[in-house]
Length: 376
Ligand SMILES: CC(C)=CCC/C(C)=C/CC/C(C)=C/C=C/C(C)=C/C=C/C=C(C)/C=C/C=C(C)/C=C/C=C(C)/C=C/CC(C)(C)O
Ligand SMILES: C[S@@+](CC[C@H](N)C(=O)[O-])C[C@H]1O[C@@H](n2cnc3c(N)ncnc32)[C@H](O)[C@@H]1O
Image 1 (cartoon, rainbow, N blue to C red):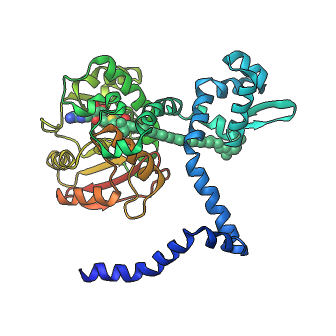
Image 2 (tube, rainbow, N blue to C red):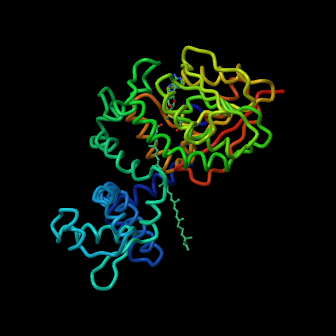
């Protein structure tokens, strides 16, 4: 046994002893009688129960969205009777849904049995793409219904069918499928773009290349942010029609060059001083990611910068969004994985990048960022 392993075992011993005590119901009963012990035990109980009922809370949210309850309450407060009638749900069951909605803080019960939107319920309506993301969780949850089976692997998941482009070089995705995922991607991208642009400094950028940029939502936000910059979008050919249309509608066509291609088989376009990879790495295995980061390095001039933005694992300090939701999300997708900012930084350093920075993410459930530069 190595010295490191032995010293671990020595420091582990008291904690193991404590865990074994807490795991005994007789000890729990005694500790719960002390003032501090009682408080801790109640809090732990609350939190364990909250983990246990997570799915039920989430499905309550889904029912409120599917039955358009949030929108209806935005018009005017309403009773279970009124909402049950329009949603074709028996009144007593609608009353139970509304009570659940109030209990999770999305609705407020008023006098006279009427409900109105709570602040958080109203906020959901204003977050771009959030209602579609909530609806689309149903696909993930079907894959998660048997988590042990998912962990063992080997089966075809529904989510991997939902995002088929991930597996493909060009040619494997029809235009309709590409348009469907592009819309969902673009809607949720608005949040990612907001937070990314808050974490990086794009002042003075001449040309920005977004690799795997989808329909270009990030580039449009970046172009508005940097009025003098030009943009290049590189993505699979199937994505180009929706990108072209979106830049047209935004009146930004003259500031972007669209280049179809696959980063698996082609070199990246030259001429950008900043390259962005937004929600691209976590779709792919390590080998693909290493290869892609080297291609980015080759495509950049000296001093050029790489910006990586996507939900990340907390690494040595696991955190809920990266290490629970996106961790299982990418597992259900079948090809990718979340990585920590340190792991991503290391992959960049291995490719030759320097000045690796990890700004603090305001909303890790939306995105985190790693930036680095090619040495001058
Ligand atoms: C007087 C007034 C007006 C107000 C006073 C009171 C006050 C200060 C109120 C504040 C209210 C307010 C403005 C609230 C705002 C709340 C917001 C902005 C909430 C935002 C929430 C965003 C969420 C929950 C985002 C979730 C995103 C998810 C789940 C994204 C998932 C993305 C996935 C799965 C992508 C997959 C892609 C793939 C394939 C893996 O690459
Ligand atoms: C998760 S989406 C992210 C899109 C966009 N950056 C965003 O955050 O909304 C991943 C993107 O990578 C693109 N992609 C996947 N494989 C690719 C490849 N081999 N070459 C170029 N782009 C690819 C997909 O078409 C898709 O637009």
